[in-house]
Image 1: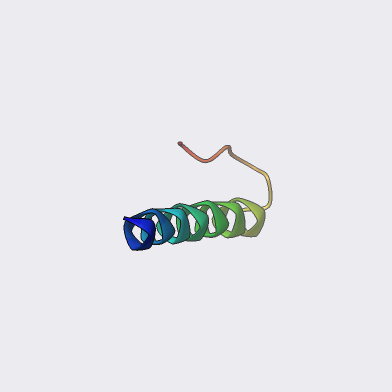
Image 2: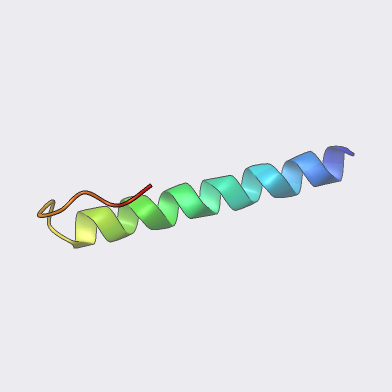
Length: 34
């Protein structure tokens, strides 16, 4: 159960990081669809 929570947390962190990187790379011209 702990492993599942850890994997979900890691997946969420990866998605958030990738969204932030894409947003900053876009030059703040448009807001990312969340």
